[in-house]
Amino acid sequence: MTVSETWNYRIKAAQRDLIKRAGGIERVAEITTFSKSQVGRWNSSTESDLMPLAAIVVCEADTGVALVTAVMAEINGRRLSDPEEEKRGQTSVFATFAEAKRHDAELTHSFSLAIADGYVSAAEADVADRKAAAQINALTEFRASLATIRAQGGGKAALRVVGGDGE
Image (cartoon, rainbow, N blue to C red):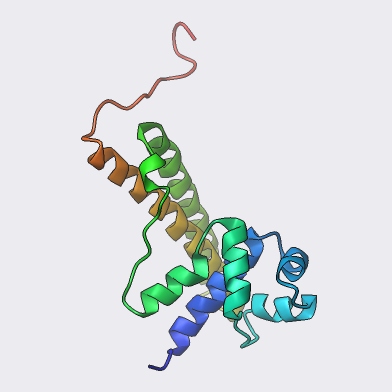
């Protein structure tokens, strides 16, 4: 099977997100024992270098998030399950929804500015892709919170208004 150019960009974007979550280029170089220049090439959207499996495993273990592995699974028509899913509950649904909406607003704002001139540059596409990735992650967390509520049979959520009478 050949990996299309689209999937290559998805893997590169996941690598950049993973490097960012792991603390940046210098920290990833430190924990993977690869050079800063090599990690920089993995982090660059204009370089073709892909992270080796050993570096992916180290970074994903360090961050606790399987960003690159999830994209590789998706390439092969698979999904990863989240072992933390059962820990989510009613209170997290509010926080995850708010976070998803925040990322939605950031993507909408930045992409609206990008398309205002009727042209999307490669740099603007890169920014939009990063914001879309953040939104996807936030929506995934929100969906996991909803799934937990469904699995628990629903119920009243703990919601209160702050600043009203008696506060």
